[in-house]
Image 1: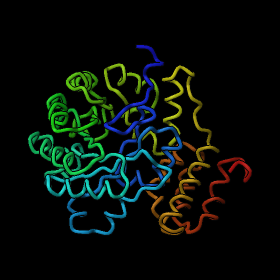
Image 2: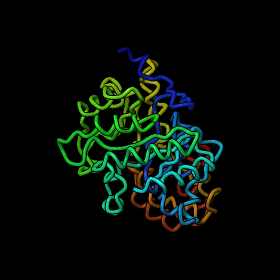
Image 3: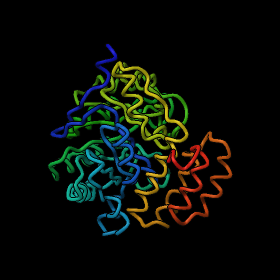
Image 4: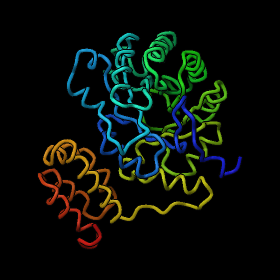
Length: 331
């Protein structure tokens, strides 16, 4: 397989992704502002934070707010979690009405609170229920239904080929496969042989996920048989990571890494987008949990992070970030 074939468009049902690099969903991180940055940074698909189907069923305003999509982020998938086929079907319809291009089933979240409800990775224990959920959703909407799960629940276990076949038979159009078991959360190596077996078991695209930070790691998943790669944590402080990896995979050579000034410009844009969605003070407050990622590795990052926690205006944020860019002109 040549490098030039590693980066390519992907058809997902009737939706055409411009490339096979996706932003993975991350709770508390992949809001609309962040998804726009990822789309601008080269992602062929962006995915929302997971949204509770039960909360949507009972009209929770915060959950419905999470369904809102902005023009600059398409194609976009809304990810849902739940364990009741009827509730998930209703939630899929809500996602479709909200303008989602795809609707994704979360069958891989390892958080105990989610699993106790029978959702997330707990669905991997009940393949028939997972199939029923996907099937009900497929019959309820016109947009493609996708699903994300893990290679197993514990180390050494490979449930992925079976679950992949269940998903395909139920009508799923794409699978995102996290290469670590649920017991490992987000640490440790991915199981490439298990991922290869899952990709070989079905005809629908399988996107690999887990620990991808650069083109070499993306290439390893693609050469194992994955049709694409979903990138999460590496995008948190560098939404342009998709373009950097794409440049390498397309044969154009290694993409240039972000300079400190470019990173701060992106962070300021993120803050501006957040302010536009939530209001200035609330938008800055919502960004506090991510500031450590953006400032990581920069001189004086700890002090800047502490100062950021007290900011209330974009002007204050800009003044704080200027010291990392070499002057106001760099921003």
